[in-house]
Amino acid sequence: MRGDIAAVSGDASFRRYFRGQTAAGSWVLVDAPPDRENSRPFIAIDQRLRLAGVRAPRLIASDADLGFMCLEDFGNDLLWPSLEQARLGADYVQAGALYQRCFDQLLLIQQADALQPPLPLYDAALLLREMRLFSEWFCGGLLQRELTALENQMVEAAFAVLCESALQQPQVFVHRDYHSRNLMLLKEPGTAIGVIDFQDAVLGPLTYDLVSLLKDCYIEWPRTQINEWALAYAGQAQACGLLPMLQPQQFVREFDLMGAQRHIKVLGIFSRLWLRDGKSGYLKDIPLTFRYLQQVAGEQPQLASFAQWLHLQVAPRLPAALAAAAAGAQRPGGLR
Image (tube, rainbow, N blue to C red; front, top):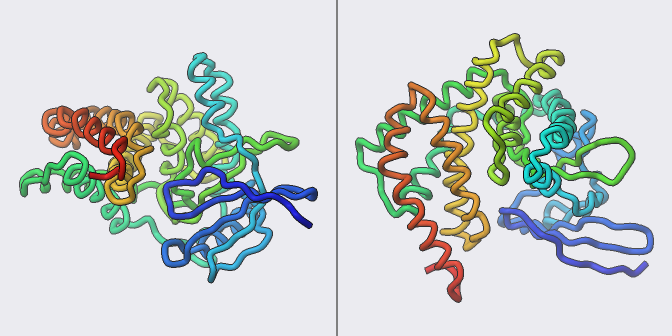
């Protein structure tokens, strides 16, 4: 049987994606170079999530040694455009309905088996290693500002606060990149959301995937609306036995601190994608990610010194650094 193969948009990794179409149907073909990407975690996590009822793609065929996979085709309808349309129209009812579908899948993910065999731990070492990407790639790389010894001490103290908060939360199955560009609107009966890009799953803090979804680096909502949706999820998580009864203020605080950890990490990753990998597409998402971080840091007494430093030493340098990076991206050869 003959068919056509066409490239489809990829992600921030070294994987390439193609759509194979024949008279019998359509499939997604993945080329993950084994020296750059390990396909085995994706295959194992896909099986585990599907056993939990999560709408992850069926694996049709694979060769992990060569880095090839053939997957069920979820189509092209990412969640992001529908959310963005709702945002532009201030249609919080429609957005809330879409997020509820995401909550339904997230609760299944969080109840999936994380122990047989055990997922990697989202422990202090990993949390801190991720946040230190901020110091290396965002500050030292994008801003071209190496931290002084005193600044590094202050930044590490902030990292410790965020790490402690994360580790005190209930530990569940964490997708680790649960946001509007990794969730699909499926054209099938029911209201399922398709879940992709889960190969980095870990056992970690309950609010991590929730904050990835609601404080998405690609879409911005009013703070009061984010909190309303977060507390709606919290009630459902409590009903499932995933979350103990908490005061709303305590849950929102843990949610916010988890967001600060993620956004610190993401600032480093977006900077690295440009500086190391020549991928400039994420530069435009840095301002929103930085605003999220500034907002939380400014509201938490334990992060007061960090917040002041962000305001005085980092924020003033960011526009010029992004302008220089954008100019470099437009020049032949990309990186300077």
